[in-house]
Image 1 (cartoon, rainbow, N blue to C red):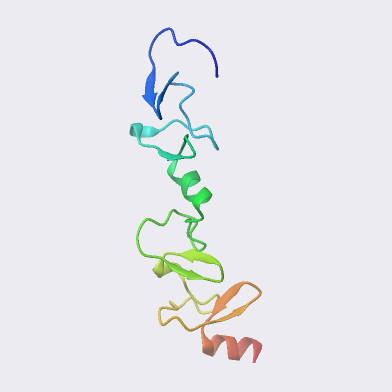
Image 2 (cartoon, rainbow, N blue to C red):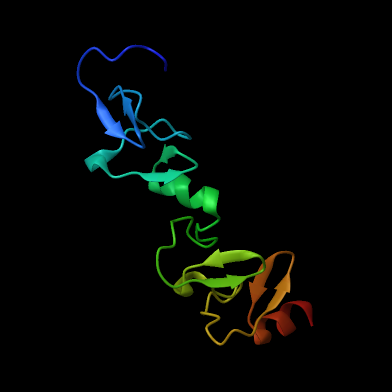
Length: 113
C-alpha cells in the first residue's frame, strides 16, 4: 500500500506487510492460520493459487493436490471424472466427448447413436 508501518507487521515474501494488507491478491481474504501460497511474488489463498495454475477440478471446483485425470484440456479428481449422463466413473480412460462433456461409450451410443 506504500504507507509506513508503525506497529504490528507480517514479514513474508521478502517484505514487510500491514496485517490488513497481507491478503489474497485475488479475493482479498486474510490467510486463516497464516498459510498462503506464492506466485510471482504475490500471496494467494489456496483456491486462487490453484486457479492461476490451472489445477482446480472441473468436476467439483476444488483444488487438486494429489492424483488427477487430464482430459478435454481440463483436470479432474479421479473420482470426479464421470459420465455426464449416468455419472459412472470413467476410470478406464475411454470416453466420448460431446459439447465439452465426457460420456461412457454405452451412454454416448444411446444418446448420440
